[in-house]
Image 1 (spheres, rainbow, N blue to C red):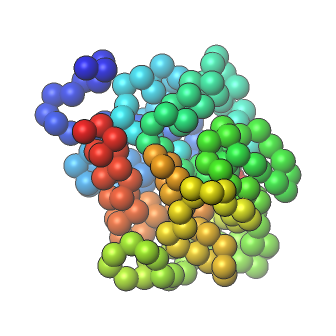
Image 2 (image 1 turned 90 degrees about the horizontal axis):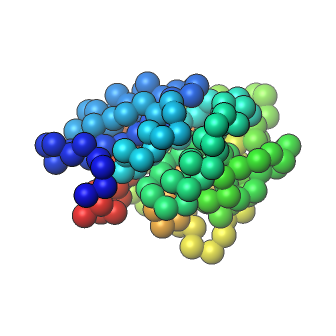
Length: 200
Ligand code: GLN
């Protein structure tokens, strides 16, 4: 149908692998029965049905994305197809970034503040309530951004101190924490299910 090498009914999900925490995402996706592709070139987005943008350093991502049409290819994909961003991934997907302002893919209707929790709470593990079935969710925060504003149509699935930490907007899912570093696979499963629904 779409040039995707579909041979065994498995979904093909890409993980942007320019830098950052891509390996752990690929492992979780593989454990959920998904074929994973490490995306390092813009043309690779043509062969995937969903994409994970991992944590890392958003400014470094932006530097890598300046290469040969990568930013534009990624922007087109994220606007059209299921994409799951974690931490720096949320910063890249946001419509507005502050502290400081920086370029973004303008897809997820949120305002996000970088490194928002200050030095003492730079990195920590919290348990929080979520609307996902199965009870509280472990959330690993590493120099996390804070979502300051959500637009209409952005659904909040979990919060920290009153700020959204897991949100969904149509085909977009975003977590300011790192679900790939916890044993709980519910957030990745939610994304995989949304990719399956989008491709059905
Ligand atoms: N602090 C990083 C940034 O601003 C994000 C941290 C992360 O992805 N773990 O890009």
